[in-house]
Image 1 (cartoon, rainbow, N blue to C red):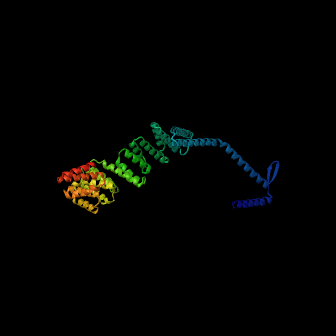
Image 2 (spheres, one colour):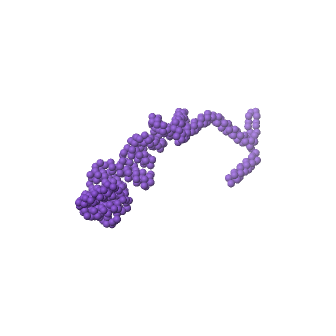
Image 3 (cartoon, one colour):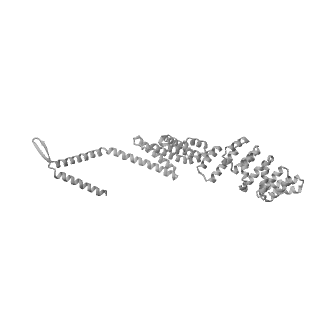
Length: 417
């Protein structure tokens, strides 16, 4: 369609020119004494057009001729830039292939090429970013070669080159690489210092949080590691099971770091509600509190949410819960005794609850009921520790009533376990 329109326009122009030229009787007279030259108007117009075209062509030719040195300089600059980029690609390829010496040489050659371009005033617009990347590649290769002085030199150069506003992302990358190298050298505090130099947004990225978590764990900063693990769990950096296990382990370490009841209570209060609801943590915290001489009533308060869901616990956790409650039976109150008795009556075949109820009866000096419950529990308990403790309790009960033969039998059975 467009070609047809152009043809119509050309035909129209040709027709207009033919009509104008065909009926044009005008002449142009040029006087050059003593001569007189008569020319038709059509010829004069053609000569003017030809002169214009000739002059335009000549000017274009002269412009191209005078522009040749600049074109040659630009071509040489482009060749150098292509060579510089090729050296950067070679450095990256060698680094990925594990050829670290060649990677460092290529990166340093790229730096020399860029310096040559900048000295000639023809440096690339992203020269600072290119220099930073080249220095980082050289530093990464030096780290792999265990050449720490060269690594530090290239790292400092990279940080100096990436301070400009347009190199912010590259600067953040340099700080993260420096933190990772510090972790590889087992210098967690240095890694933490590098990560603290990141802006707020960059410091909350998953990669930065992972390194911060590793550094905090190596430095034994349990509280900081726990906080970082919570952020990673919110970012879904781990699977739910892995995140729960990681948080539970760090919270356990935090509780183990407390050496008196006040510190333990402070550590327990610093945990989030979801963490305090974890049966493993609650049981461990209660056992730890009793072990360091804390209030047994407070320990049982921590265990109450776990006790209310004890029917959902596995056998191993239920055994730990019973052992934790057994530690504080000397000061157990009537409310807890009622809870234990109600749970045992609701589950009369649960040997673990029978053992706990029997231990509570022993503390209350209800010898007959305690013996009955302990005998039933000893026959059904699967956990070796509780099974042994049940027979030891039966031996003490036998000694209490003066039955030496039954006591020896029970002690012998406890020793076998």
